[in-house]
Length: 222
Image (cartoon, rainbow, N blue to C red; front, top):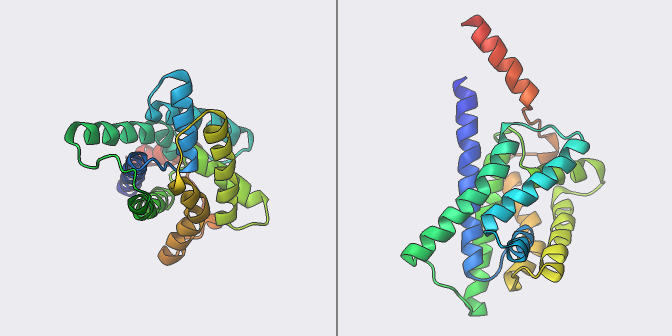
């Protein structure tokens, strides 16, 4: 039981890191592709970027269910929490003025690169807990397991699609950092996984059924 609680906490820490990374990139006008889509949807229907994150996450979650990818506690927490953490950091920054809006491209680029690393670390932290990948990352696993490409290439394909829909069709905000995210996001995540010795293709997420069997057996012995 203690091990699973720690894994859930690890999952949530990963979401907090990702939410922080999103808030940082928003201040430099260089959201990554998925968040360009979130931003585009938020502007189109008048909701926050965090609420848009949740809405799109639920839609992708349905696709994951159709693809029969294992879904777990982490999947639901992803859909519910990353958007909230993003809005929390955005609002906190607006209230305290910690990071001003940056328009200078020479300042944007290094900050964007830092944010890409932050996001990759956040992805690794929660995915390695294996409590269920989030909707978007479950989709990445679905594609990676079905195509003869590396996880980095599959992620680039999905993010290119998200950017096209969000930035070019819905009018989401994007900049040079978005291009950096498309080109560097996948390879950076892959590098983080390699450094940490984590093979995404061997991910065995704990499903709701697995959790239920564990709880049933645990309390049955109590």
